[in-house]
Length: 368
Image (cartoon, rainbow, N blue to C red; front, side):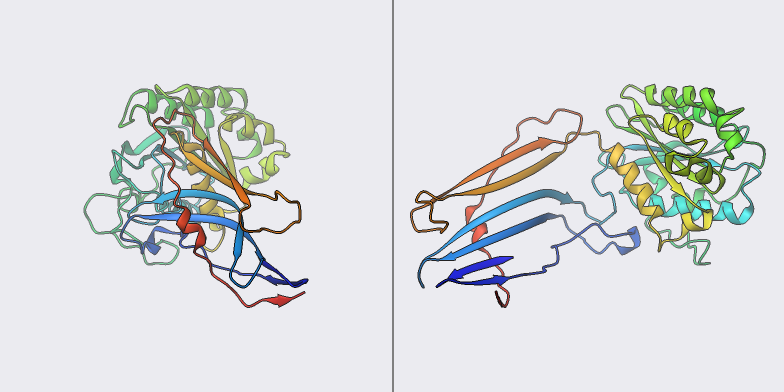
């Protein structure tokens, strides 16, 4: 909102301006072919008209600066190793299995894959045993030339042996449900290397439709929590878990207050997250939020590297206390730079271009 004070009449101007760019929802929407600097900001500008020729400005800004990569992803600045563990127990019927694949396909589209600067990922299936599907983890988990979903009958693969759509397409399981063994296998894979990078966050993503008894009884409960603790301790840098509870498991979780809620929360741990989805069909539905929720969960706990947030506040120094900004009066700018990651960031340089503050967009006023 812009406010003019002129001859005792207050004119207020409200502007709704679209952001320069934003994270888009799916990899298929990749439209940006060059790196750009994104600016997200809420700003309030107060203009006091001292005369026809003298206008002083007071800015209050809260800004976040972020760098977008060559392509736009939901999580475009992650550098993590991601380990998918997909429930293939007998309770997952063929249609639900296909929805699970579509869910993972779309999650995989949310990240840029690069063995040096981006994400790597792998997957294994589990019931009472485990089956390594895409292990070791690899930057080839994502393939931009593959696209589509099983649910839409438009799945396209290019036959190059890359990408989860091409590498994970058949169900091998069908037995019972042993969460503790499935989760312990993740810890063993991470500790065994299997493509894991040093100095990179490890994020496990476990999908399950386990019942309450399976979550809290044999294969679940304390043994499962202990296995999850082993995942968190795995690797030289530690790991974290995203647990996606679907159908029966979501009901048992009850958003944390259900009969299996404490067990699932304990398995996710203090640095993990739980994503609850009513049905497999909901999970794979791109018009709902569950795919984005899962990607954001992975992104939130996978960005362990040092990251910079910048807050900037400008305060008007009203030396004569007349509530008007007049020529000669000053402003004090306060910059707060915060490392929002967990590793050190050094040699930070902050440069301000004051001229950019004068680039304004005016709108039609409303008389008050």
